[in-house]
Image (tube, rainbow, N blue to C red; front, side, top):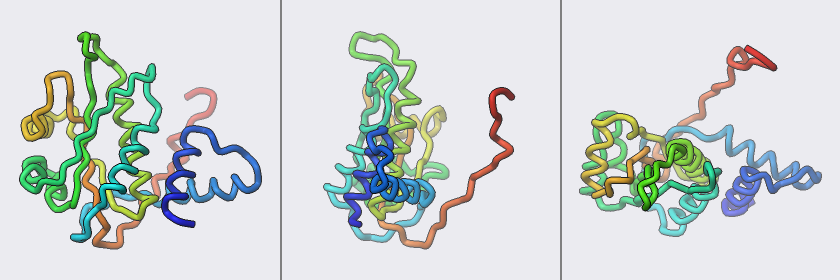
Amino acid sequence: MNKLKILILTLLTMVGIVGCAPKQQDDSQVVLKTIFSRKSVRSYTDEPVSPEQVETLLKAAMAAPSGRNLQAWRFVVVREQAVKEKLAVGFNKMIAKAPVAIVVCGQVTNDGGEPNNNWTADCAAATENLLLSAEALGLGAVWTACYPYEDRMTPAIEALALPDNVKPYCIVPVGHPAGDDKPKDKWKPENIHYDKW
């Protein structure tokens, strides 16, 4: 099964289109495998990430759910080395070594000045879609936080010349994995409650 088909199946399942027919149940296993295989990749080879791959990642990100369908997410694709180095602050040094970084931003107010209280949830959903699609494409990526940390947000705002009503939510460096990173098993039944606490 090629990577594009895997991505399409992943996205269809995420938006609830894939049903319960036997063939589709087989396809759902591909989706679950992608979800359970996702890992944080912090080192990359020099192999470039193609414009087509970046566009696929962004389409996947924009297929995420959005509160009131406001789609407050905005994206800045960074390939220029000098800009990536400005974004690589603190624990985010891997940004400078990735072929591309995608900065997930949120429009915190609309053009009329009305606040969008859902922007962080929208950006989180878009980021998860982006990470899952990177996994499906055989790429490595990691979620590096900006919001709500001023010491991370300010360099991004300045480096990207973001307008006043747009805030950087996170930066996702993307590349071909240089190592053999493994997903973490985060299943903890003790964190689940049924019907009430």
